[in-house]
Image 1 (cartoon, rainbow, N blue to C red):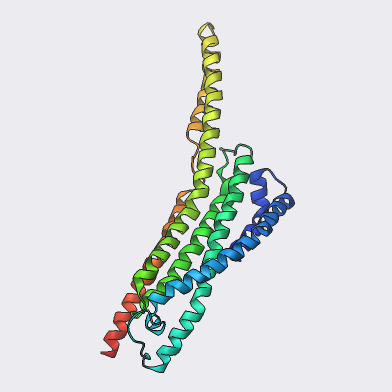
Image 2: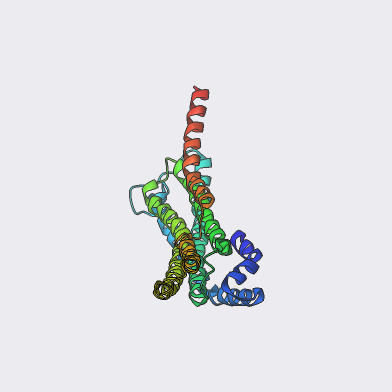
Length: 278
């Protein structure tokens, strides 16, 4: 919901970047979301079933309760039994939401990829026009990183088999990185293509002018014309090829450090509590 609201608020800038009217972009976007609603629900159901199956070997006592291994014994105290039942009942819904969001991330990525292919060449001299791409990519990565951080709380319980859930949350990290870089790589390629096209045009003019100027006796005129063309060529060469700057990279590094900071903080707090209890 946070991502959807933010993207709607920035739809005017995104429409301008794509060469569309805001209402036209919102119409395309809304129609695409409605078309994928049924598939998203099916993916959510599949995610729920996957979470339920994954918790069977991960949660202590479930395998024994189902008669798949050993003999079941009630876990003392009673509060632990309540917690285990609650965990088994509620956590699959989290898996369902994650699976649905994973599908929506891929599906919406396909939409924006199609719009990017159809859009005219970007203005390579004004990278600020591509800020909606950078902000959307950063938000998507941030959402997945926060999800992975919250999910890492599962690993604080020594009773849960962490190796069963670890690949799943590693996958969340991969999705977070892909959510950031896939759109940026697409625009990076588009910027490079436009940059190369403009360089070819400028160099073609430079070659024509050079041939004419070699036959001219007016050196001052030759230098003035060639100087402007060479300055334009240098400006095109200096154009940034990624729709991302150092401040954005700094924010990304902070986002990726959130899970590490939380894990270190949790470990230090655990030691502090152990020391206080004695």
